[in-house]
Each structure stands twice: as structure tokens, then as C-alpha cells.
Image 1 (cartoon, helix red, strand yellow):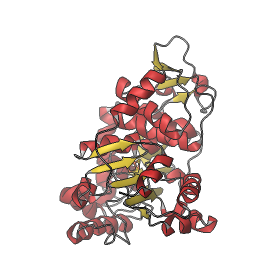
Image 2 (cartoon, helix red, strand yellow):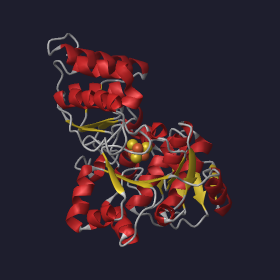
Image 3 (cartoon, helix red, strand yellow):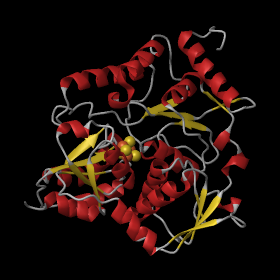
Length: 385
Ligand code: F3S
């Protein structure tokens, strides 16, 4: 591959992996079972990214199952989202290049809910930070947090360098977190992830005292830990598959009701929301069920996006949830989300959301944020005046 005998794109991909392997002193390359590519929105890629992709798409082909992170807009309903046609044109060129490369145009940050479900111990090359943390921690698969080019290089070669979280010794906890706060909702897990990520910056936290957690709790915890910090893996005592790696003589951080309340307050700006969005990370079927129940028979009074994958939306259609959600006037934001879409250019000023990760990035984009539970997001969206 490196000699160029298997084409230009494969050679370029192998050059990237060899360079990465040298930087991290990797002993060898290993095969990966799947790839998830981030860096899909034209908002983040720009023309340079599009050019890089188009060049690889001339003769490059994915060698393993490869799925995509959300794009900057719905690929079919971008006009109703208010996306400018120049942006849409460029975004569709990006998608076209990925299609030529043989990548599944799934456009979701929860590939594990939409057909790219790894198994314990499998090696992956995933890019989306929340999915990386979920795959490592909740599933027990092994992946570093790949950048766009290195994930694509893994796809075109089927390989990645052996370093970091692919190695057992790098997966042991580095700090304990004693959870004394009662975590009642996914939003409480999200706030905890935001606090711990912000405090630690990186490392592998080992949570003690959590008790139980749903898929939605773990999904949003993964996202928050990886947004305010660079945490790519965590353990929860008695719950996650590699928590047996232990945390006996570690330094401990406390997460009490005080930190929970303070984090909630840090994530709330002044202002009345003119835009409400849930599904960061993309909604699960259970979240669609809750939304359908909450929105049934009501009308939303302001723009309300429900971000989810096409696969979970399809399941929601079958279960009858999607119809109830859409009848309220809420819109499904498929293929995209409130962060990677150019929401700041659509004229909104204050966004209400139930995701600490979304608050973090929306604020960085210059918007004001209000962090609230899913039920309150619905109340806010349906409130008159
Ligand atoms: Fe997914 Fe967008 Fe949040 S990619 S994790 S919904 S910022």
C-alpha cells in the first residue's frame, strides 16, 4: 500500500497511518472492524477539506464498514431548515465524495443505534468524540479518538496503528469520581460529565456510587465528558464491562449535589429561548417515545428540532412516535444536529437544549444557551408568548 501498488488514495492513507504510528511509537498496524468518520459538515471542512476528500475519492474505496457523522444540514430537507443554497451545494459535494469512497451515508453520531454496533474487544477507528467514549466505555470496544483524515485513512486501508486505547494497559482508570449526588435524569448525567470533563481535562475516570444508568444516561455522559474535556473512556463501578480494571489507590474527585447545582447554573445564560433542540447525541427510540408522549395533542410555538438518525426515525415511524412528534409542529433534524448545522447563521440567539455538550459548542459559536431536562425543553417549545 505504501509503495502505491494499490492506488494513489490507499498510498496517501497509508502515509498518514505510518506518520501517526511513528509519532505514537506504535509497534505495528492492526486491522479494524469498523470506522466512523467525523468532519462531515462543510461548516467544519471548508473548501480545503472538500478538496482533500475529492482527491481521495478518485480511486479510494472503504475496505471496512464505514459510517459518517452528522452533516451541516438535512440531506433532503435543507431548504425547510433555512440553509443557504451555496452551503447546501458544497455540503452535497462532500457527501458525494464520501459516497464515491463507499462510505455509508448514515450521518449520525450514534452509529451504535443505527447498524454500526461494535462488539466487546473489537478494534475500531472512530472519530466522533461522544461515540468514541461510548464505544470504549459502555461496549468495551477499542478506539482512539480519530481525526477526520486518520479515520478515513483507516477506512481506506482497514488498519490503524496500535497505540493508546487499543492497548489494555492504557485503559486502566486514572482517577476516581465519588458520586454522592442523586442522578435522577439523563441531564444529571450530562451535567456530571461536563463537570468531570472540565475538571480533569483528560484521563480515565472511574465513577463510584452511580448505581444504575440507562442507555440515554450513558450516551449523554459520554458526550459531555468528551466536550468540556478530552475524556475518551470512563468506567462505572459494577456497570461498565471493564470496570474490573479497578480503582483502588486512586486520587478521588467528589461530585455532590453542590457540584450538580453549580454546573446546572454555569450552563444557563440569561434570555428567552427562540430555538429548542434535543437529540445531542442523536435521540434513541426511547427518547422518541418520551417526546411523542409529551408532545401528543400539543403545538410547538417556536422552532423545535429533534435530532436523530434516519434509522431511529424509521423505528419511530413504525412505533407511531414520529407522527405524534411531527403533528405538534416539531421538526426532525435528520443527518445533522444543532451544533454542526450553521444555526448561528439562521438568526437564532438563545437555544434551549437538554445536552451539556450542545451548550458547550453552541456557546463557542456565539449563541446563548439554556440547559434543561427534556420535559422542560418541550414545555419551553410549547409555551405561548
Ligand atoms: Fe451528535 Fe451533534 Fe451532539 S454530532 S453528539 S448531536 S453535537
